[in-house]
Structure formats: structure tokens, C-alpha cells
Amino acid sequence: MIKLIATDMDGTLLKDNKEIDSEIYELLPKMKQKNIHFVAASGRQRPSLEKSFEHYLEDVTILAENGAYVVHNGEEIYSSVMSKELIDFITEEIKKLNNVGILYCGKHCCYTPYIECYNTLASPKFHYNIKLINHFDDIKEDIIKVSLVDPQGASRYSFPILEKILKGKVEIAVSGFDCIDIVNKGVSKGNAIEILQKKWNIMPEETMTFGDNYNDIEMLQQAKYSFAMAHSEQGVKKCANYIAGDNNEGAVVAQIKKFVNI
Image 1 (tube, rainbow, N blue to C red):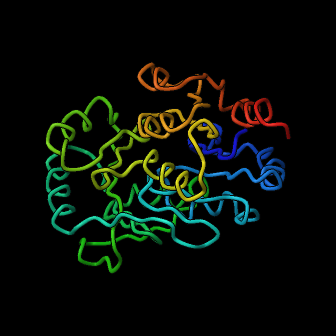
Image 2 (image 1 turned 45 degrees about the vertical axis):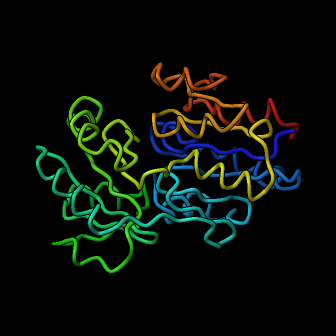
């Protein structure tokens, strides 16, 4: 019996136009009635995820910032704060790259000195709580993730460079086609799912997960019923036990209905 369902958002539960598959709202109370925990697991921030589920927050656990921040019924379950020394080191390496934007992610707000990042994430597509800053010292809250926006293509340009420098010091992954997420060593969606599994006494054999990108791999590996989306790269697909289908055609909802009697 499935007791925990976790899904990535962008490219998975969300369509390419960033609209959510609204049929999920019909399933949320039904899953809760069956004591199935539903987890929105994303590289997005908590306020953005809560906006997507604003009328159903009692039915959804928020796994934000690639596993660096987990909230259940408004209560913090887990967080991993980055040290200023580590952030300074990452920042200096990112500054050496060409034509990229940096984003500092706190629990409640994100901060960037780049107007392009601000305009994109503040738009209705993302609903980010975000502020423009001049300097990192302007930030007054703890930072749990540093992100990089690379319009040249993160997989091709910035990721190979940063991975060589940061490997072993942090967890670094491509989280979208133009983004890189950097969190503390040991932090991942998979680690966060494992924390929830232990909290709720749920086994991987009772877990279903959905993802489409490399930052989803650890989460896929925490579940027997692991689904990669049809458009995922082969490196992601080989870490899943099933292929879900097309995110633009409600594949996540279809697989939930298929495997769970609701």
C-alpha cells in the first residue's frame, strides 16, 4: 500500500506553461482520507509552493529548496543553513563565470542583485517572494540555498565548471534547463524524503515519487514506485523504475489514479 507520494513541480506536476494540473486538487483530500501523505518536492521556495496549494495546505507537505527546507502543517520539520564562509566561496566562483545571475534563497524570501532574475521569479508564473539587493550583507536571514541562472544552458556551460570546483564541498545539481542549485553537503530531495519516511514510519516500498531532472534522482531512489517523466534525460530515466508520460497531459495524476484506488 502506498503511504507517501512526492512529486517535483516544474516539468512534472506543472505543465510547460507553469500551470498546475488542477485535477490534483480533487485527489488531495481523497489521499488524506486514505492516510497518504502528499509532498510537493521542488527547488522552488516555500512561498511559491504554498501559492500553488494555497487552499489545500493542510493536505500538502512542502519540501522546498531541493530538500533544504521541509514544512508540514506550517511546522518546520527540517532545514539546513549554509555558512557565510561557504556562501562567500560559492559567490566568488560564480562571479568568475560569464553572463549568469545569482540567487540567495532564505526560508521566507529570495534575494538577487540581478534585475533579470527578479523580474522572472516575481512574475505570476513563479509567485516568488523575492527582493533586489545591492550586496549580500543586505540579507538579514539565514540562507539555505544558492542558485545560479545560466541563460547559456547550465548543463553545457556553468555546471561542468562549478562541479569540478565545488564537488565534495556541497551538493550541486541542474534543477532546470537554465538553473543550478547549490546546497549543503548531504542535502537533497532524497534526504528530505528519507527524513519524512522515518518520521511517519513509511518504507520505500510504500513510497511513490515523480521527477524529471537530475536534482530528482535521490528522491527517485527513495521509492519503489519511482517515475521519471517522458522528456527526462536518460541519466534520470535509468534511476527510475517507471516512465510516467507527458507532464502536459496530466501524467502524474494519471499514475496516481492508476496505482492508488481513489
